[in-house]
Image 1 (tube, rainbow, N blue to C red):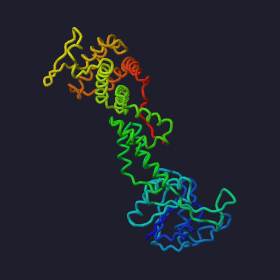
Image 2: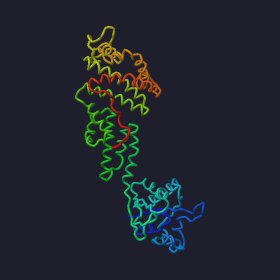
Image 3: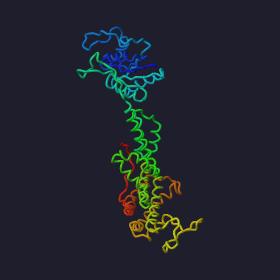
Length: 424
């Protein structure tokens, strides 16, 4: 296989010569500096293109006594290329290193490419590492060895060290999907993770699998598929950290066999779902969910406390003064949202009944926003200025009432919002 070496060149020649002799590359790309613009001091390119004796064997030697690096390493003129860069401008160095890598990939498409960042300034080393990390198959290495000071390794003791960057590359690959969680975009995270190569490392593969599976769990949850979410969370129940373990308990409530308890949990979950849509700027979706929350709350209270089904209300359950319409097909009396809340008002005596007495007009005004939205009967999108007052009303009036009602099934507080950060 063709081997390509890309290396930064600084003040010490020996590590680079060692790398070339050990690796025996077919072509070397040297990243060098030109003369310093302030002091006119020669740059590191002199070590590659200098004539005659242009390198000191030791730093304290009086005069250069060695030929350039290609000569010392036995490279022919067609076996190396020189790329000039800055000594400290990181942006420029990164760009120049990236160009060298792209040229190498173009000229030697099937080659093994090694990036050696032993030589050069700190910025040059950083620039080459950053550029090389953009490519999964480029190997990073440096020449190191024993030291008796902080300046350089001892001559003759150098050896090649390949640097494991798989963990760093993995973190860079999954970074966009961590950001997706910040937007509650769990489906996006799951689909993105499916597209990246599964790591070969056992440890990284385990991290990848957990991230993908938990992204799928919360994607299912966000799509109201609570059973699928619970099944995935059960697989990780033993290792979930405290900040995620609470979701396992909520998921169990959302799948409980007790219908009254399950629906209470689903109502609170629906509210959290609406908040997530609003956080994404999807206010029409948020309002649609709020409408369903208000309607479903009345239905749940009537069904669980009065055994009244709003889809088929018995005539004897209709209070005097309340008019309900019949379904054209079944002939059964039906109660829509506002009629259902009137039934709550007359048939119950708890927090919900008190709520509708004091908040009926406010509720009607807020629901007008939904009725005028594109997802209902109107043509205008719901704006953030529409959502904010409804959200305040929900927080101050509706949700406190609902939590009083759900206390009957031992749910006394809102569940924690689904995670906006992946931490496992």
